[in-house]
Each structure stands twice: as structure tokens, then as C-alpha cells.
Image (cartoon, rainbow, N blue to C red; front, top):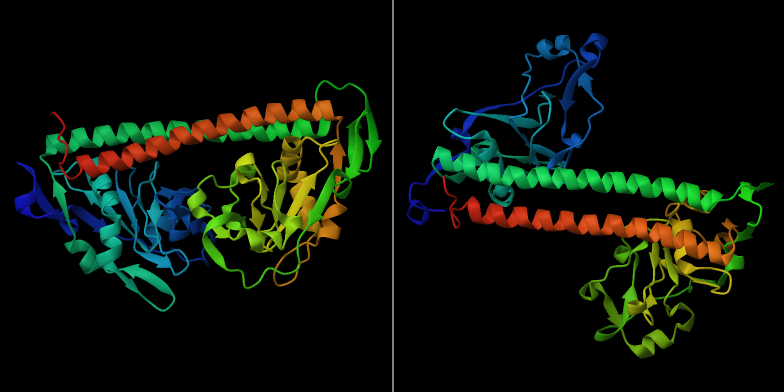
Length: 418
């Protein structure tokens, strides 16, 4: 943004002039008294997107002073300057407790003329500009060129307005953090419910011993093949011509969390009805499942009505439950459960590309409640899943709100009253 385009009272400053930039270092790994202390020591692997994950590395006060390292504060801003070639990310974030960093991270201690919270958000908003102008490519890593980074300019309102803008954005961040905590709690509740309901059922007092452990006395053990009318993966799916409109093609990349297939039809490739008709046993119906068997093993996708009639790629297996014995929604939670996933991984081949064959998949044992109890279990777990989904939608809305506010407030397109 040029000076002429700035709102009245605003100016610009180079990133290098916002405060004091310092780096870090690595205490000697051969000195045991340098490690295992209480001071978090961050490296690029501890950063994900714009957040710092819990680090496994902690150093002692002796380790800190051995390299003349600085103890940075939560108000400081950490920037990854050197990133592995597979990451291609240079997060800009903060830590909630005092911390130290290694040599691949630079930390800004903002000077008194600027609001540290505002500078933090302004740098986050300039991530794209930083990647475009300051990142240099090496043979095995990418890194930020310090001189180019220091010359990047950001727009600065007067200090009082900086503080007000930062307060608005911080309030949204706090709402995001609260919502993330609610999602984590709901997921934990759902995990506990799955473990309880899928192994002990609802209100049982009499149990019997089976190959799968204690089961309610009116449950039995069945194989997945016994519960499905179809467990099938066609052997060939090559030289397919895609068309602008036609039959949606389900592929593994479209399988999301909790068994959801993408509801964005723009993400689906299309094949002609004639092509789909060549593979009738993989035409999907509502209540069917697709299971990824190449690439990421074990992803489960539940087919809703809007995808009835779709077809699928050769990297998936189609499972069509016997509706006379199985509630498909119940079976979805069984297959997403930890026990089934463990059995699936144990049954899969450990070749160069992990996969599983349909005959092997059919032999995986499953605890089978009566159909009416399956309905009740599925209803409870679906309700728990809906609570997670609704809260995730709230989180997405908050994240979109923050992006919009940053774009408006940090450029002065919308002014705040001071």
C-alpha cells in the first residue's frame, strides 16, 4: 500500500523496524544437564499452520545460558525462517508461555512505539507477501531471506487505533480458542460413547464370553462379509474419459472425517453413464460404504442419498450392507472405531503400498447387536457427531469472520472508533 493510498493518519513501516529481531540456537546434545528442564525449546517441527504445537523438547536454565539463548515472552512474535522442503510453510505465531527457539526461527520483540498484538496480526496478514517476496529456495530446504523480509512494508495506524484493532481481532481469536476447546471435548465424549456403545450396548446386565471378549448375551459375532451383500473392488479402471457432466466419481481424496464424503460437487470428476454402466457392481447406493485401500488405508466414506448412482475409482472397495441385518449408520461407526481400524491395519499387506483384498476384508469379525439396538446406538452416535459438526461450522464461521476483519481493519478500509 502506497503512502497516498493510506487512510488519514496512517503510515508505513518496514518489518525490520518494528522492534528487535533475534534468533536462537541449539544447546549441545552431548550435555545431559542442558536438556529435560522446564523451558520449551521450539524448532520448525513444532509449528503447524499458524499455531505452535506442544513441543517434546525442553531445556534447562544451564542449557539456555550455554549458548547465550534468550527467553522469549508470550507477547513476542515467532517466525519460522527455515522450513523443510515438504512443509513449504513459514508460520507466524506466538507461544503462551516463555520459550526458547533454535536457529531456524526469528523472534520479534516489538518496540514501545507499536502495539505488539497489532504487529502480530499485521505480520500474519502479510504471510502471502512474505512467501512471494522473501522466500528463497534451496536444494533441501526453503528459507526466508532476512534482508528481503526486513524490507517488507506494512501499514500502521496511530498507536491508539492499533490497540483497538488488535482488541477486536484478539476477541475473535479468543472465541476461536473456546470453540476449538468445545470441539475437542465433544470429540472426546464421542470417542467414549463409541467405546461404550459398540462393545457393551445399552443397558445390558448379562454378558457372555466370545472370541471378541465380553458381549451382551443377545449379541453375536459375525464377519463383515456375512453382514454385506457386496464387498467388491473391480480389478481394472484405466483409460477413463472424463466428461463435463455425468456420473460423479467418488475417490479417496473426497473422504473426510467421521465418514463424510464431500458435499461439494465441484470436487467430483464425472464419467459418462456409458462408462459407469461398464462397472455395475461399483455403482453406489444410499447406505453403501467406500473404503480406501490404497494410499491412505482405512478411510471410510458413507454414501448419502445425493450420491446414490455414483461410481468409484479402483482405489476403493464398495461395501453394501445387508439392510435386513444391518443399520448402515451403525456399521459406519463400527468401521470408524478404533478396534475395527486396528483389525483392518493388521489384516492389510505391508508391501510397498499398503492395501487389503476383498476376501481378507470379509473375514474381519464384528460385534453384532440386534437390529433394533443398532438403530438406537446409531442414533446416539449420530447425535454426538452432529454436535461436533455444528460446532465445527461455528468455528469455520469465526475463522472466516477473522479473515474478513483482518482484510478490512488492517488496511484501514474499515476504521474503528478510538
